[in-house]
Length: 74
Image (cartoon, rainbow, N blue to C red; front, side, top):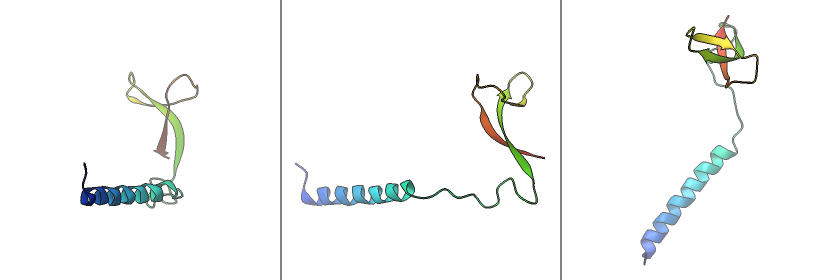
């Protein structure tokens, strides 16, 4: 049987983890400062896939393969 001290300690840890998880769950998304795109470094965001034959990113125009979002400097 578990003693009262251990039970209380585990309850406090569980409550603290629940509070931390709750804070992350209800936060709104914000843009990161100093991102790759901006007024000084313009770029575009494209859907692309990595082509193993040519060793470069290619635009993903069809939905038949897994695509990634890639930021490209202009």
